[in-house]
Length: 249
Image (cartoon, rainbow, N blue to C red; front, top):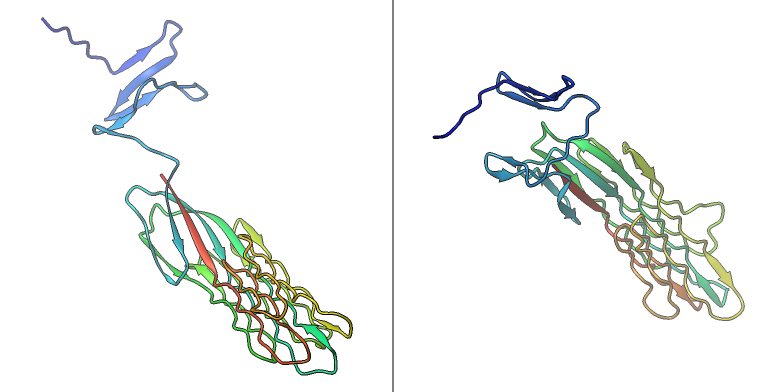
């Protein structure tokens, strides 16, 4: 014979609530209590999961689509890096353009309980040009929630009163500025290595080089400048921006 106990509420000997059922809602414990669950808590036979569940990485523009059960996301939005500055024909024996600035970064925790998808825009890295300043990086965004501008392109040798700044995040819980590009150089002395690009939140600044190919930026990093001996050359391209999405239940 099977015994069945039917109750709506269980209390301890002091009258404190242990468990209560009311209109199909079950309350365990009271405010301030610590509830220890031994074993696996299940929802209709399936284990209940929480915390970081999955991630998505965007290196080109597209659409973020919410996976089933996700309620919050933390997004990292980084703008494109500026290109390195080129070199020009000059009376100076050795010279380097300025390195490109890195894209800024915005970091934000977003409640997506009522959201199904968000448009993701990735800012392009700036392009290097022979004998000219590098192009600026583009702006990246996660819908209208947060965005980050791109870094400025590096200048040519002899360009004064100009700052190669990094991009800036906006709308995030944390808004970061990308690393600035180094200054342009004119030198009558010995050979030199070109100025490196600025680093983004992810690093990625292009490495300097002499009489070779300057290093391109990655993940929003600035491109390295060109270094040459009295000749025109192009700086390296900046890195395209990136959006990284952490998905939580």
